[in-house]
Length: 138
Image (cartoon, rainbow, N blue to C red; front, side, top):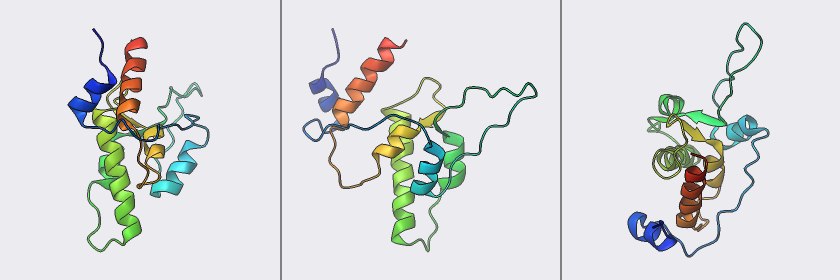
């Protein structure tokens, strides 16, 4: 028995009859792109004494997101409100639909998918593909 696209649609109410969510998952320059999108990015990890960095996730920790975007300023203009809305959606989908193996990070690629608010993507198809990929990687 397997989860089907119709199952995903019925359970999550995510759209499945829309444009496919196709994007590059290349992470080169992700910090710079994140700064351009939301005005900041997580700090670079510190190098240990041996000069070797631990593997760094391509995205932000949920702790960092909450510390920097928990409350939208009351006097915010439309651009700032859209930034906080984008980060909130990124946080929610990274915590629910597109959870990474650690459960601690919001992957950069999902923020990148939220660049344009008015695009109608097939989020249900993306969720099912992501689920299958996570099962295969177990």
